[in-house]
Image (cartoon, rainbow, N blue to C red; front, side, top):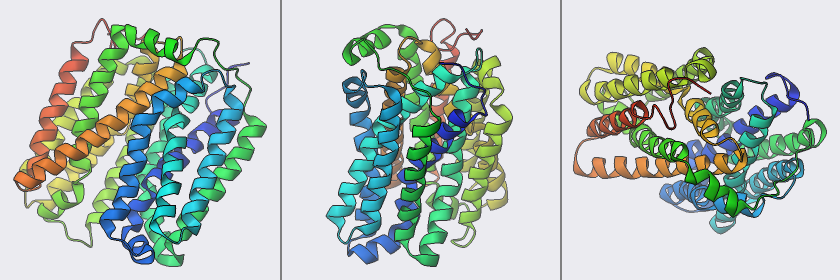
Length: 388
């Protein structure tokens, strides 16, 4: 199997696949009222469709990767993309909540294994010395989905109905499945059992440090991001313009990834430390700038700009910490990342119950500072001064 240039069809397909996976995950967020009314349930119940998806990812990523470690990668990727298609068709046609939940659980199971396969593929196809560039390219699809997935699904749902959002996702998934069957090179499964791979990967202190850093920094990020709408409303934004602030944040994230992706291979450690420092200051700024929407918007854009490349940084750090079994490392990272998302939502919810929404910024800043310390002290394991 030859290594690919970053912008050849196999690598681009992996990036579009990342867009599909993350867009599928966040689709219900912008469609809460429409889905709730049509399915005859509360908006909170529709919100659980997102939570159930994330829970499946957290608990199933590592076991599913272990069980499928011997399966050739190409048919597995084709099958997972087709699975996304089927799950979105189920949502598109669902007439009651139980069917919708079944579709989301199926999608979550696909997601649990998908990024292990995708990042494993990308690491093997990456040109020499461009592992970080390959991780950034795949994460570009994720970043675009986060920035545009909710606004686009909201617009589509309001224009032609919420079911078409899932129908379009299903069409994209099935087209990608056919494309993967055509353009992706074959990669055999591993001869080492999934359990043995996991034990080898976690035996090294480098990956363990990366795991700790990812959990803490994602908890910080999603403690505030999950509740960013009420925080912005308290800061002086209105229901009419808060969407613009969220779109500006997402656009800044895409721009940040485009600008900073070059540092993923050449200067990962200092770039990640800078991002964490700016995130810490931004979280404090959001907490302190109560009633100053203009300045708050500037801080949110700066936050998005420097957070944009962070998923690529930490994915590259994880893959670099243990190179022997990239699919297993990617599965561990996927589970770890989603643990941080879930923990962040829990921290934010707890902070909101005991005080006003802006207080979440202080908690997020403290966590981000903790993540910065974990990265800064990892000069020998996880975040070396010189990339290998």
